[in-house]
Length: 288
Image 1 (tube, one colour):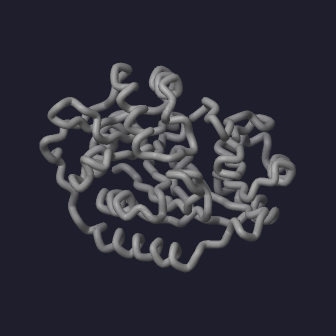
Image 2 (tube, rainbow, N blue to C red):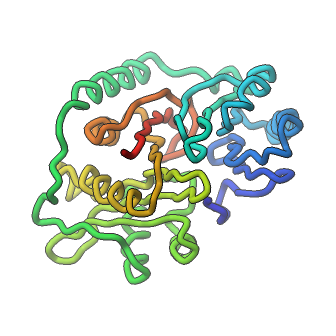
Image 3 (cartoon, rainbow, N blue to C red):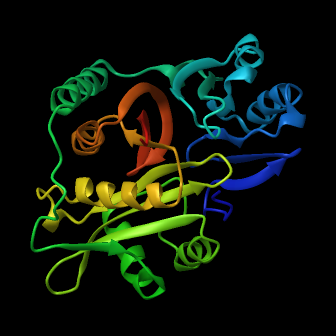
């Protein structure tokens, strides 16, 4: 669980549940719903969003809570089957408090549809198990943190969590809540990275924070990082992997399709990433 405050959006407890909120993504994100808070937390989320004039509430909840949220104006946007230790699915819901927040421009929607179509075509491609030279890929350690924050700072104009901050990376490493991976060039320069955010209780992980320096693109490094991450997650006994990828990112959506992930929906105007609020696609995979 990401629990460190970002410069703009903050992770806090609301009742016994965990939310993120702030002006950067202009939303409330219900990250973890505590069973005792349902259903009373629903009007509290709406009231808080109205007070702060947020445009959206994004909620990740178990399927048994779906009807209660739908009755209060939420819409189902995606799902991750088996998210809760294989016993229940995670529903990704959205409630729009501003009409403009649900609007997707025609050219953007066309681009999103093209990305999903291409990803579908590539889903039958078999990924190679070997790393493409001249890059070496491994799990990152404390000594890599400065290089990692520099890489993220060079790739992303903005991000929903403080991956640019050394203290944040170290904190998540030390508590073993997020595992970081990197690809290195022959000169030992970190040129690509990713992370797996662990949910040890739910036996799942979010495969996230992928970044490749422009000089190193075109070598399928993200796919090789993903393969290593999956191997690590299997060894940790996790069952479900998922990602929330930029809907207009051909490379990332194709990468997950090639690795056997299934697309389950799009979170509309959901996340401030790369300098603007973007639509995000949800993909999942059940480990065998």
